[in-house]
Image 1 (tube, one colour):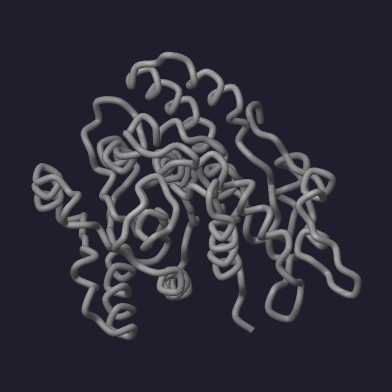
Image 2 (cartoon, rainbow, N blue to C red):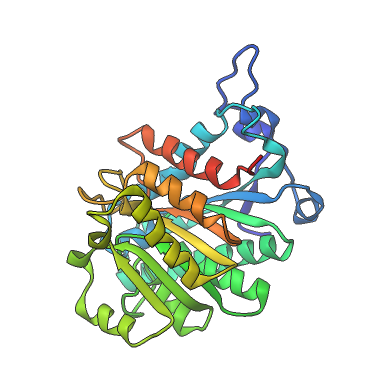
Length: 325
């Protein structure tokens, strides 16, 4: 596929910290160089990156999300192969080649022009997700901005030939007006183009959701939300029970979106002092897997000033791909 870079062992070898007597994940992973080879692979989970921050910049966010993919790889390929972590059920496919898009976006562009570049990335992401799901595999997408949710939803919908349900753990609804494409309106576009049916949001911030968006939500019985404020005084068990209500709303076969600005003091495009913690997100991921998840998308992480960000993303992915034994 034009615009996609397949990875091989040489491509990730520099990320691996080799140690005698141990097998790191990256040492045991298998790779493919075509989509025909992917279809023949026994891997259930297919991981790929979208290293861009164009949609974030178009939405007044902090740049830096383009670096999350490499930060994730640096940690993920160094987890241990052991009885809990088995590499045969996943592969690292590669990345959407965003270098030309990033270069083009660095000129003097209006927001509309940035949105046009985002739409080109949308097309690439949608085709990737459609191809992977059509082969009965589960994409794991590492962004990049939350603008890529639109491509995920469109691709999944086209693969299944129906609108899909999505659960989004996020500080924001990303239901802003569809004036131009950016990281804050992917779900609105997906709704209006009928790729998205039921939409559950967990942890949105009351302070940063405009009234017109609450009005939009209230008018659609297929949209449900709980705010972060609803979770503040709950026990751990109560939080999980409340989260399960969101998974029940989207039912089986839903896309799982996790925007990293939902976490407290987590370096992201819209960093916040109030939010969930990393362990709560790990529990949410584990609980989501009680039903059938079509894909998982991690986005908006900005790791430049914090080496722990890539490690957190690695925990989220390893939790998602780990099969109960």
